[in-house]
Image (tube, rainbow, N blue to C red):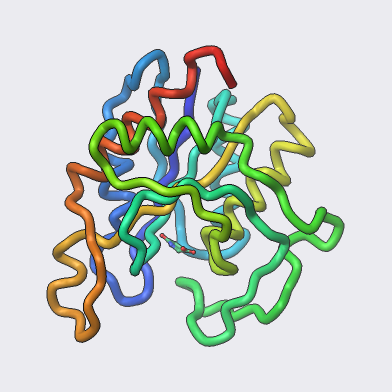
Length: 205
Ligand code: PCA
């Protein structure tokens, strides 16, 4: 399969985003899959525009978006994205602060990820990386992208599967924080993502 894997730029005052650090270090070939890595902005709609343009350019079979979830201790395979942008206090990288807004006025309430999240989570764990299935991607830009990519594919390319994976902070991000946060070494995140992505292209999608 041809797989587009996106990772976000840093946000919220962080120097790095573990998602992009991991995605940019993925091999070009994982199992039977050819990987295209792409950096995307932490900005509502612009993130989606960048992804939809890339979809038109390379016509992938699957789109996997990866983001940071500070505070989580496992690689999280998101089950669902909801039609809601709500981040009143913590703006995105262009200062947008939507409150209770629909992402697409004509869109359904939610979209399930169409990735095989259970098998991907199990493969990630089997590779020695802590993993979980998450039932909320929040209401910030990651949920926006999970929902928005499903919406785009449903309308324009129903054959493309897509979904979202959240990854923990890196150890270097938590060292100087006042509160204690869990973290995960970059090599563990990369190994887990590779194992999960290898599940695709096995013919069971
Ligand atoms: N994490 C944020 C947006 C960008 C990222 O990496 C989120 O969880 O919504």
